[in-house]
Image (cartoon, rainbow, N blue to C red):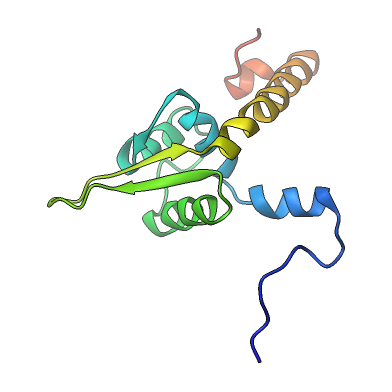
Length: 127
């Protein structure tokens, strides 16, 4: 007998949140979508901007992150059904409500990187 998907067994909101946003690119994808819908290539380019390390994101990894964000209800995928394929990703209401959380994380990180003297070496602009 198949089990239905349910809330995490522990019922911990922090664990549920962590599971929803875990992954290398999810926070950055949501942040990049805050200004409006983007296509796959635009998202990929945005993720490569300012990245330290590899200048390549495996298409499979990015597709998996986008699919997981869609399944969690943070983003919506709109397929225009044309050839060549045209697909756009946009934040849902739930995703838009998450942007202030990411903004707070970003501000906290900027403040503490500046205090630690690491901001410049990591390419973070002081605000």
